[in-house]
Length: 296
Ligand SMILES: NC(=O)c1ccc[n+]([C@@H]2O[C@H](COP(=O)([O-])OP(=O)(O)OC[C@H]3O[C@@H](n4cnc5c(N)ncnc54)[C@H](OP(=O)(O)O)[C@@H]3O)[C@@H](O)[C@H]2O)c1
Image 1: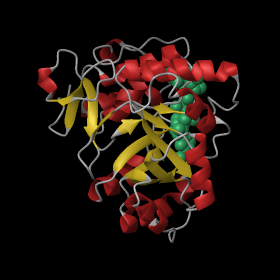
Image 2: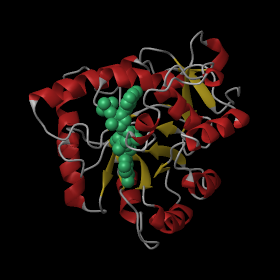
Image 3: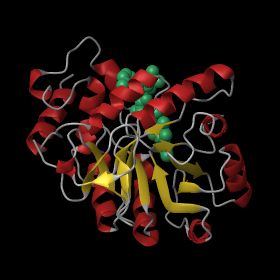
Image 4: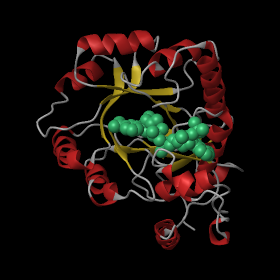
C-alpha cells in the first residue's frame, strides 16, 4: 500500500475545506494540491454529462440530493459544460437553495473563447465567476488560451484548463498543453483506457497542470464488465466497492489530481466519495488491477 505524500492533504469530513496534515485526522479524506496554486482539491468530484439533461422538478430533486451527498461526503468539485444539455441550468437552480453556495468548486467548459457563450454559462450557473474554465475538446495544435487567460486576469475564473477524450486529438492536446501551460488538463482515463498514462500524464506533470480524469468508469462500461462479480479478496483492503476499485486505480497515480465520475444517484455519489478514504493501491497492486480487468 502506498502512503500519501506531502502534496496530499487530509480534509475534514462533512465538507469542511480546512486542510490539515494527513496524520492529524482520524479519518482523512484524500485531497491533492492544484500545482499552480497549492490549493487542496478533494480528489473525488462529480461529472454532469448526461445526468442532469432535462431541467424539470425531478432532475432538480435528484441534483440536489447528489450535490448534498457530494458536499456531505467531503467533496467539492463539479464538472459541467455549456453543451451538457440543461446541466448548467439545473446546477444554477439548485446550488443556492441547497445551501451549497461557496461550498462547491465549479468547473465548466466552453466550446470556444466566445464572450456570448461565457455570458450564457455565467447566467445559467447563476454566478459571477467560475473556479475553473476549460476549453472543451481541444482538436487543433494552434488553439490559443489567450482569451481564457484574459478572463482569468479579470477574475472571471480562478483557473483555466483544456479537455479532450478523443485519442486522435491527443497530439493537439499535447501541443496546447506544452505551449499554453494551463492550470488543468482533463482527459479520459480509466483502468481499461490507459492511453493518457503514456501521453498526457507525463507532460501534465512537466508543465505542472492539475489532471482531472473524465470517463473514469468508461461511461459505465466497467460496471457492466464486472456485473455479478465480487471485488477480489486481494483488493478488499483498499476497495469497498467496484466504484472504489476503479477510482482508486486512477488515484493510485500521483499525477491525477481528481476523478470526476458522473452520477445522478446520491448513493452512488457517496460510494464514489469513499475512494477518498483509506489506502491507495501501490504499483504492484495497480498492475494486478489492470491484469484483472484485461482478463474480464
Ligand atoms: N471532453 C470532455 O471534456 C469530457 C468528455 C466526457 C466526459 N467528461 C466529464 O467526465 C465525467 C464522467 O464521465 P461520464 O459521466 O460520461 O461517465 P463515467 O463517469 O465513466 O460513468 C458514468 C456511469 O457510471 C454510473 N455510476 C456512477 N457511479 C456509480 C457507482 N458508484 N455504482 C454504479 N454505477 C455508477 C453512472 O450511473 P448512475 O447515474 O446510475 O450512477 C453512469 O452510468 C462527465 O460527467 C463529464 O463531466 C468530459
